Length: 241
Image (cartoon, rainbow, N blue to C red):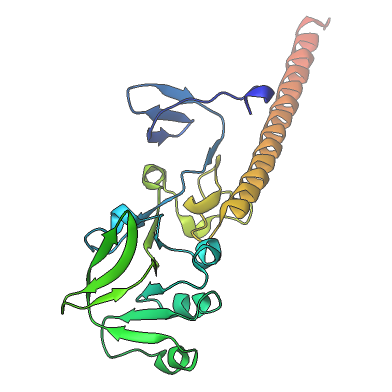
């Protein structure tokens, strides 16, 4: 990007005001005619001791991203039966942790040979920086080498809300309901992976470029018309009566 004239600025965005002025922590301000927001999301995890420390290692979210890495190994799935069914194609040793006896997908899980363990997860057993088991409040420890769970995905869009941003009104090319602001990736599409996010960024960038060209052209036409009117007035002002 720098080779094409782009500039990287390290900093945390704290606010965006119309116009646009982007405020960074520390007091720096950046002005822009258009803004592309690609701030992603954050994962809100269940309050299970030790889970945050294992997150992204052997406590993970996406079967498609990480299922292969744990193929043929003991896998646990926390509270999400859909994940358990997806992971069954990678391993025959799947344990589904259910918070109660009420498991609507019980028949489907059992038909695929997925073991259901009822109870509340209280922690993780970790040895030599590896997950070894999932602990329950009743004292049981179920040996596992990976734990898949679906966190609560929270988009990082707080600084857009004061502008009236409504994510439900974002168009297919990333254009938001706030004129001049586009979004790409997980901040607007919680399910987008890396490839999809990059594609959204490319599309949004092209749309922003088109929008700027359109604005420059409209301004040029307005300036040209204004100049013609001014010239017309001057001609009539100096013409003999």
